Length: 131
Image (tube, rainbow, N blue to C red; front, side, top):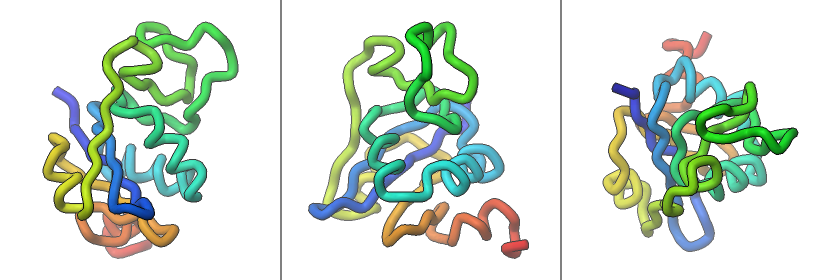
């Protein structure tokens, strides 16, 4: 069973979020979000994929061979783009509303240029005391 996570972004009208099935722990997904999805544009590009199987360092593959079954190293695996499933995103006027629609153990929220995990600064969730 995967460690599910919600990945949510503040928008001008509220919040938009997606589900990620694998590796939702702060030490994996949290660290990838902190290090590789740390601007509005990058987070927007990630959320635009819809629900994910697995989060990786890059959104877009470099070649044409990336699929769900044969993913390119370091490329995020999306259910819609890579497996042809229906596109899914959750939207709402509050973080709680969006997160409540997504099955998860961890909730990551990008707002005002910063990530949080379950309401705490992401660095604290990753490193404990912020080391």
